[in-house]
Image (cartoon, rainbow, N blue to C red; front, side, top):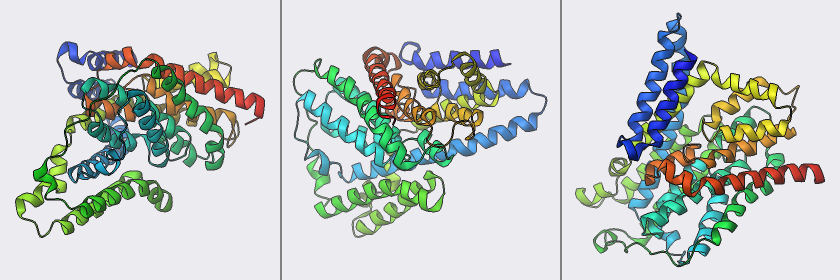
Length: 427
């Protein structure tokens, strides 16, 4: 059974990777892979109820991620419909490719530490559409946004789901993780940026200006209200989670509801047709639901591998054969570029308790870095990458050819920095 499910997963993974060659949408391949993995699992397991319970448990967690993604994408689309991003893009006059790359990447890095890497990627992809006209240039910048968002999310407990898991589990503390991972995380971004700066030349083209007909329906005040409200809602999601201990998707849905009311109040005096173009209903229609279904298929497939114990077996093998804690953490980070980092970190949390590795131990902090940044090595390796892949139609092999080497370079540079500061400074 394990071999058969693993084979199905590999074949599905290849179908996603060769999407452009076989002319089959990656969302379809991901959905089929996920369903076939669970179908095989339940057919070869005598206790059908147990498998169903496992699936329902996983779907509870996965639905939270999907609702979060849906809410965040709707808020971003709503801001975009009100041309709120022009408040930022109008201030970014830089068209030089190298300077713009640094501005976008550094901004993404710090924004991801406040929000999370998934929401930040959705916001930044929307911003890049306003800044860069050429599709090929925008794919390149979007890919660097993925690296920056994952690096920025790794050094705060709310920036990445894996650091949040370790924070909630008591393996890391806020002040300690921020102090020890900031430098490795910034190095993870700066190294690829420095090398890529020598490869870029010239300027980027800016998209056409907004249509006059639509701008006439918007006042600058309304534009500012929706933009500031939308950004505030996104920023307050981690605060809501901390205060209420409810999952993040509850915060994003609450924020979407509040923003919905604000838009209804602002446009209540407009005619129905004009009001509809700025509504949440219209924003929902603009969302690419194929991206959400692709995300669902990938996560369901990974859940099947976790349920049959394959991920735990891999983690146990690493423990036995890799005697160094650093080697285990680095290997898990690289593995997270193929298999989602959430079940990997969950498996490691189950393997090692706090009596073996106490709170703020070297291993937990290193794992926070590697699990958070390792997914950048492949476009499918992180929630940020999957979101960018869906929104900008980034090819798996294009990313591997153009970005993977630089992402790996930054990943190992940051890992080396973490080891070095631990050896020299005891951090």
